[in-house]
Length: 473
Image (cartoon, rainbow, N blue to C red):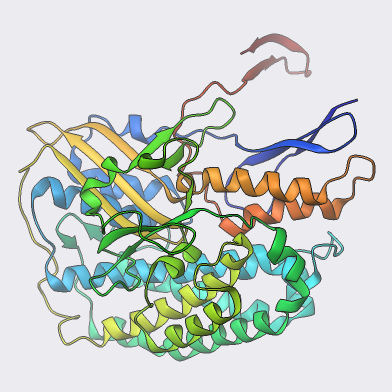
């Protein structure tokens, strides 16, 4: 008889989700889906608010990557105000955003994914966690904690708080960077570089152990999307949207981020609160693409910093010019971190970084604005419409995890078909299904904006636990 396997919750990710796997009468996988089961309505609850409040409000949409939303939101308000941040203000935004990249990448690799990589996907579940990592490889654990701490300190020192900072405002940043804070951040660069390079060396030393996983965990052809600068290098803050196919050919000329709606569509499925984005010229669901650290390396010519570029050459020698396996997100995330640290140092050594001109000012000059930047998990888009008084009328957020939604579902089905057998279910089979989701490092609290028709059941309980009333859909 056919049966359904439910993995609920998916562990070691940010947010709430489950996976369902459908088996036929022979115990073979016929379908699998990744369900995001939480809903947040920031697009609606911000309506009616003054638009200058949007960056601070959007920072509260997520505790993992608040700076990413601050950046994209502030850029959208810049667009509405028809104002360009001062060069110093833009560079300070870049630094705090790169601090976000470092801390979030460290969380993903060291805390959430390294237990599988260290102990193996068949390892003891009781050991396969960050405490197990700390006991078995203390240096790896310390490096992860140190990197995340340094990234969070950058956010705190420059933005006022580690969680939900408020230092990024329309027109630039609110605070001038002092020489003391600059030097304090720079003092942490050598340790951050050393920790990242140790992690890369450790990862590469064990790559042969994961050859099967690299072949089967979300290995399929798709397009990739990321921001690039004028030279075609990685750009976490600005630049143009570049999209390539699985063979590395550009699907369009570099796109002005303000015109992303001409190319990116969104679909809603009844089984998830996470919208699925797609490349409009290819339609839905054929227009599948991926974003994030792997996409950034696939799309860009280079990273633009020496250590990361040297490692990028080795990465491409090992996995090809366009890496198709989702497993390679782990390696790409470490290179992304290395580049971010180098870029932080480069920006902080600029002659005007501690200058006084950190913010441009203006009023409401447009009724619509778009802001796009690279979040840790990929390209992030904020689109706002306001009235003539600057009150928000409409908001649409196109989140990095949403860009990856179709890819995650395809990856889950691929891995389930390869590993899951109904006649001999084992924990390691299901862990591999979960692990392909961890490759993408989804952040679900900020990405769940699709109001579909997922089943809802509400129970009204008496003090003794009896069900008094039940409402179901």
